[in-house]
Amino acid sequence: MLEALEADLNEEDDMRIVAADGVTGTALADGRMKVRTAERGEFRCSPVGSAMWVALRVNDGFLELAASSLANAWQTDEVKVRTAMNAWAERLMDAGLLKAAA
Image (cartoon, rainbow, N blue to C red):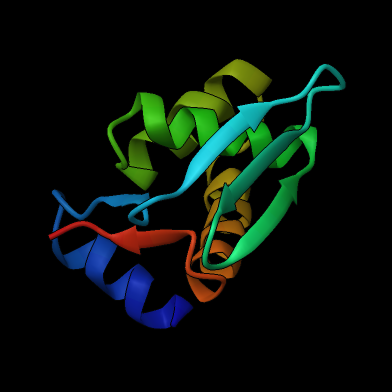
């Protein structure tokens, strides 16, 4: 799935990844986030995963923009952030919490 996601992102600048239908996220006091849906249960994000979730939402689902904004904020290599975000997004897509936008 990751290879297909990366191919789509490379071929289409407007590829977006959004929360699946019925998915909600709640920020927790310790910097973590609880992402859940009635059908699929709950997924807890670490503070880094929470930042990725927020960056993805703030950047309207555009993973490239989200990775760039996080790399800038964290003052780190954008390729490393994008690689981590791809793996994170793949796990959430496999869990049915994220989906490619139409």
